Structures are given as C-alpha cells and as structure tokens.
Image (cartoon, rainbow, N blue to C red; front, side, top):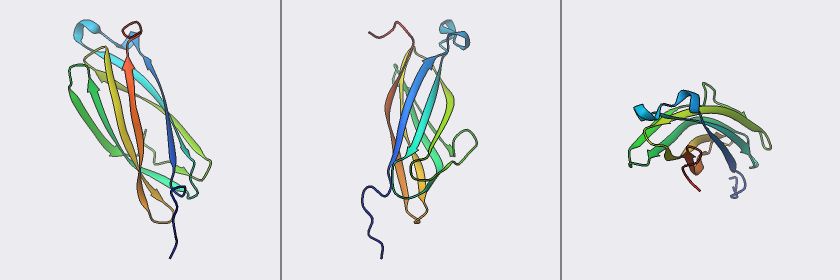
Length: 129
C-alpha cells in the first residue's frame, strides 16, 4: 500500500488575460477576451490533463459551462516540475465577467484528481479601477 501525501498531486494554474478590442463589438454585446494559462506540476507524481470544466459568468449573471477533453486539442502529460502553456479565448455579452473551473487529472499512480482554477476576471480596459 502506498501512502500518499498532499504533495503527491499538486498542479499550479496561472492565468493572464487580455481584451481583444479588434474582435469585440460592444454595440452587438460582444466582448472578446484572450487568456493564457500556464499549468505546472508541482507535485511528486507525473500526471495527464484529461478534461476541462469552465464556468464563465458575465455581469448580468448569465452562466455558461464548458466541458471537454484536454485543452487546445491536447492532453498534456506533465512530469514533476514540467509546465504547459496555452492560449484560448472567451466571448461574453458584458464588458466585465469572470471565469473559473478545474482540470481533471490522472496521475501515473492511478489517482484521479482535480486541479482547481481560481476565479479570474475578464474586464475591458477602463471599466474597473
């Protein structure tokens, strides 16, 4: 029997966002944001990202959930200390919104676990101080 500690499975998720003015059309209630995610395995066990789950909320409280396999068509395999970086986007109907979610991971030891993605803000420049 293998005794696992909390450090065995630890995935760090960092997010950077930007507003895409040229793709947005406020008159049509279309606000487009890009986000770049860096996933890093800070645990002791190699793991593969199997699926993603996003919850996207606009300022009107409209919620969209997105589930799917992998990210950007890949299911990255991360050894301890390795990272994976990708960019994607979201379209919402208000100039401000938020995203949060999780990645479902599978460790080489057979353990399935979630890597939480803390809420982050999508905001058109100049809207929030």
